[in-house]
Length: 335
Image (tube, rainbow, N blue to C red; front, side):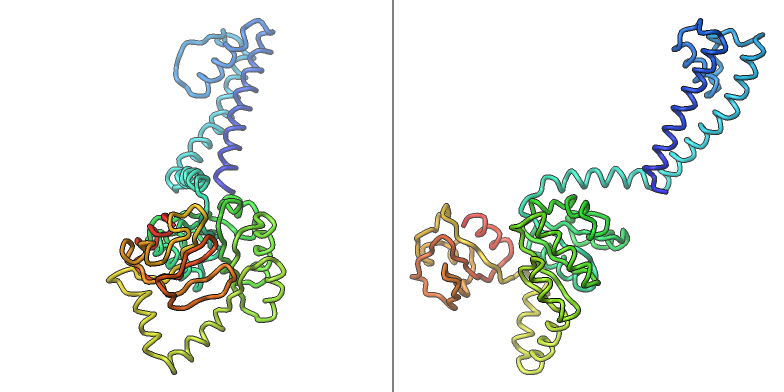
């Protein structure tokens, strides 16, 4: 039984005992005493504090018998309540509830963040890369021990629960999220979460993983922007290791080196951007942010590799750059 339910049951039981005890005294004394005096008599009897009798119980045989019965049964309920509360504190369940409430408040303040569903072999790498890029991430995972291990990666927001439960998606702030990455072990669960995410947030970017190639069209129809097969990517990686090992070593070094956080990222140009209608050379992206422009994706969606520094930047364009993640973050905020 969950700690919340146990605490609610204990609270209701205590209220019923006090109410029943007070009503009993009220009826035994013919409705003459104030009901508050009956409540007080019930409480001091159950807690055995030893205060003087508010009601004349001594010498009143029915009242004495009733008081003994009330103490025997009422003390049982009171001791159960104390043991339940003690167990909750010792086991850390109460602290878990408080931590959950605190986490929910922190997640409620997020906007434009990313959600990762599932922390299996694929999800762990996804989570690590997003956090290295200084992105705000909310993890949805059922296994609490797995979540605890992921906390070592840095500041992590999380929801301890099943991603197929709509309430957990909403708790992760899916309505305000920029994207969701679904790395669940079951293709059926992935399909369900993909469809649910698209229904809740029509503008969110959805990346879904798949095991069986046949499910890709269904995931696309369900709302996935991109579908990734870890097996397919693994096959390409093995082929690349064979025919272009130096290139693979370069990329691996860039992603895994502890000497720095060099990444390839994208920067979108908006109408309010200070570099709008300026040349790449005038934008300060190289001089101010020390970033290398690898390519430009124009409004027509065509990608120009190694663009000229004289190219004019326009709203809607996307720059593909390489550099330190902190500099990339600053440039994205500025542009």
